[in-house]
Length: 319
Image 1 (cartoon, rainbow, N blue to C red):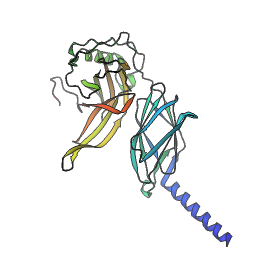
Image 2 (image 1 turned 120 degrees about the vertical axis):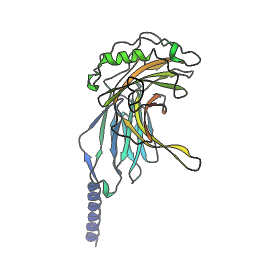
Image 3 (image 1 turned 180 degrees about the vertical axis):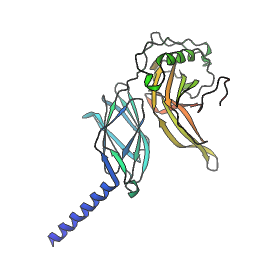
Image 4 (image 1 turned 60 degrees about the vertical axis):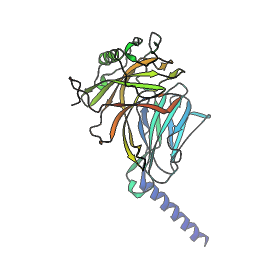
């Protein structure tokens, strides 16, 4: 009797493990992601993904804690452990901040436990590394912005030299330098946001990429520290009896390179920058491109500034 019972349990356990293996395939190679380049991590129920950071972790924020769990321990300050806590397919985001002010923005996607996800691959180990592109240190203190926040008459510090290679994005550093230099002299009256105010400047096309200049104004009373700029493709719809606007799709686009005049922004101060990213080939009519700028102390409250999907032509009109 005992032999029959043991044999039955062995068959049940073997079938359960075989079913789980059929649903997901484990990626045995470690993935590497870089700071400032949002990436998607593939997770699965009953499996824990280990994320290794280049320096000790300061904070971990999960977009929806009812779908995913992310933890770290002072005993293992370089590791973050993430896993889904629902058996169904789910998506959310994860923001990891380090003690040295680096931020890693990740998109979490659980393949679920359904048979339809039989070809899904799960990331078990992810290695995060510092980006090769850094903020440029300025040589002069930030100038003050007038009470009206009109950037037309604002002096901006000179940009320092940067030896980063921008050729990988199809834009040489002199082009970005010129773009940022022109941006700091342009008046921007259409600013988005409250505490962090963002204005979009010139939009250029370089093949399949967009090169966008921008300015950031600190309208608050405290010094802030900016995280690397990000770009989102997001859609809005109106629903319900009150026709309230809701976000229904959000996709983070990888940023190839960026340049900004300073990382720290004093009260009433201004910085200028430029960002290069791959433009999506298509989008829905309800979707738009947005530049996302956030303070490292409040990454869950970013400012979104809309970017034109197509660069204006020489006459200033959209093609």
